[in-house]
Image (cartoon, rainbow, N blue to C red; front, top):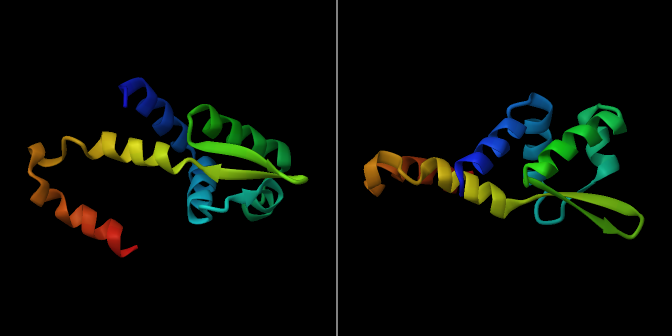
Length: 109
């Protein structure tokens, strides 16, 4: 992953509302969440949430798909994986055993 792409993703996630929405969408993978359900969960207006989703979408973190009459919002897990690998790739100077606690924490959740 290129640094500018990682920075765009991190900037998109650096807002509490967008971070909360993204984390909620990650929890609802692989099915995603209808936009209306996401609005209800967030307590925001449709237009405000749409603005935040647009930022996440432009950063490549969220995808929208039409299912019947509903717009389904989905976290792009491949993008998340890429960002996490970018952040951890040089972890501990390549000594994987030092990153083992991080990996164990991810596995337990």
